[in-house]
Structures are given as structure tokens and as C-alpha cells.
Image (tube, rainbow, N blue to C red; front, side, top):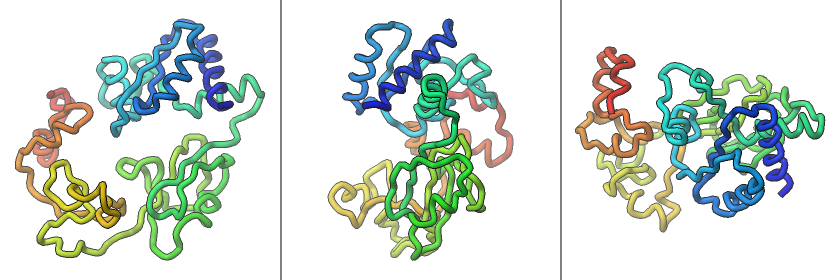
Length: 264
């Protein structure tokens, strides 16, 4: 694949520019063919470490990726550059190749369209400076009200002004249906389309065999807020082991500080 070869060349260009830097390549553990190809293409050098990681959210965040990959503590409230680490995504490496090998300036960005608000969810090559409206206009559903979010439905920024331009930092545009209707029989907590860590709702039992019970992503609160019972499920799935069921009590009382964040 041409893009893969461009990515490899981009890495080698960076290595020539940053001769004393150690390079670490993190790849999806399930992409076995890609891991094999990258390993073969870099077989002539030992300058790159290749790591296969389980694709678990939010592993693409610097605060989670660096401790996982390098076993180094990430400084709370700082960037990766403060500990001498630079994290680049695939597009950034490809832009290095295009700039050096092809003399092409940074004028285009590949952006993924995600979420139930789009009729189709492709990856698009978009010129930097293009208005958001031009990207989503003919691809978003017209039969329902939508909320557009940048990069992450959990931590991303809502895009309220669609006349704003695409910039070089865009990765994803997410369209979420504005859902305000209550769930049918919610008082009985059947969990028709609700994700669950334990097998206590219908979607957990039938999600692999029926489209009816597939989890959906919208702006609605799928289920009511309930008091913590210290089941410790959140601690089991937390990627950085910060004991959420313990810390949230301090957050509620506004007494959280950096010392508490180091509890594990």
C-alpha cells in the first residue's frame, strides 16, 4: 500500500532529524497483517520499537498511552513534551513525508465522519479552511435534530457554528441525534439499548444476536443517575487505575487535589 510506504519513509525522515530520539510505534493488536507489514518494512533498522496494544478507550490519549507504552508516570496538568515525549498520529507522519519528499504544503486533512447522525460514515480528504457546513451538509440526516461534536463524544468540543473552518488539528466529526425522549418502561430498568458492564440488562444478553437491542449513541442520558454502591466495576475498567468510586466523593465535596490523583 502506497500510504504505508509513505508512513515508513516519514518515520525514517524523522529519525534522521531526531537522531538521538527513541521511536516507539503503537499499533492495534488485532491488526496482525499491519503489524507484520510494518515489522518487515523496518527490518533493516533497529531504531524503531513496535508495540501491539489492545484497542481500549481511551488509549489514544497521551495521558494513557505514554504510561502504557513507556511505563512512565504522566505529570498531571502538563503535556507530554514536559517529560520529553512527542506523540504523533499517522497523519502527522504522512505530512512529514509529503513536505520533505513531495514538497507538498499542509493543505488537506483526512477526517472521519462518525455517529448515528450521518447517513454514511466515510473518511474524507478535506481542504484546510473549508467550512464545516460544506463537509456535513449533504451527509447528515435531515429528518432529526443533530449535535455535532469534534473528535470525541465524551471529551470533545460541541461544534455550534458550522461556518467555522476545518483546521489542521481536526480528526473526527461526530453527529449525535438530539434525543430527549424517555426510555419506554424506564422505571423497570430493562436496558433495551443501554451498555452494561454486568449482564443485568436486556442489551447485555441480546446485543450480539439482535439489531433491536444494539447500543445507540445520542445526547440523551440513557438511564437515571443512581448513588454509588461501591461495586468497584469502575475500578476494574478504569485505564489508569485512579479508583473512581473513591475519588468521586472528594470531587462532589470540591476537596480533590493532585495528591488524591496519585491514589491507586
